Image (tube, rainbow over all chains, first blue to last red; front, side):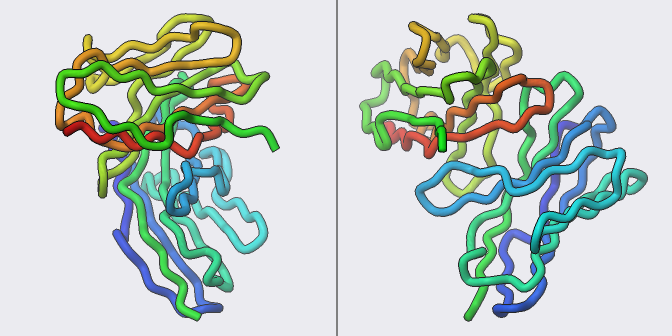
Length: 112
Length: 114
């Protein structure tokens, strides 16, 4: 019940296309859903995050869509660029705020 | 921009040896975390630490593991007797407030147990 399931494992998108990564969770106590971006040799860096009281959050080319009833959330990267090529992790955190539970990660490659 | 720094970047050790992984969290942060990522797998929570106490630990964080904030700037993870399966990337993270606040991650220490 503590798991966050992420798909796909890997994704290849043409430059300018839309990248979509999906996550699902079971634990209704999760109250915070961040997405992290990780480049090779670096630690995960927060990209964008959402709380369950909103259904969508947009920051530049990055949008999180959140479906509370389905317990699913997704990351959309519009106008994908080669510089977006990285591993993306969805995560969830409970109201006690003591730990992040990560998805398995998606390796995104944007072809120029 | 302030960042979490971890040393060393790569640690090689023999099975059964003790290792200490070091982290310097962002200076005004109060909550500290260790996570690990076995090659090809997801990032897993190990332990959270606040006010010189462990707030929460996972089942991975057994008696072989310990954490310490020995001074005002460092946060360490000790593995008492390393096993082959401890080989992983270990990430330190910190946040200002805890409780759903943003966690900032270091670049990690790659631990290789031979």
